[in-house]
Length: 98
Image (cartoon, rainbow, N blue to C red; front, side, top):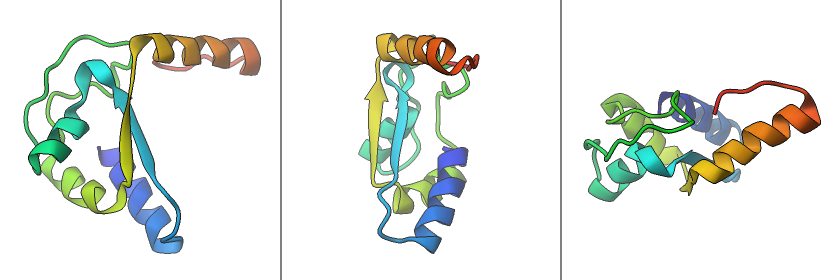
């Protein structure tokens, strides 16, 4: 949540009407769990292709910022993550992390 906290704060400060939508892996939805609970809580953790996003608990400071600026957070399946990685490789010729 640290990255989206900083980005959403900056964007909303400059352009408050912009809608900020976060995406996280369905297999480790720690931000979504925190939003439902109103505070950071341990999320169900399953290994995911998006291992860089797979944190079991959102940081409390990042959550406090993000919850005020992020308009929505959607969950992404492993299939969608894998397809996005493949499409970026095929179409843009870039190798990205899941």
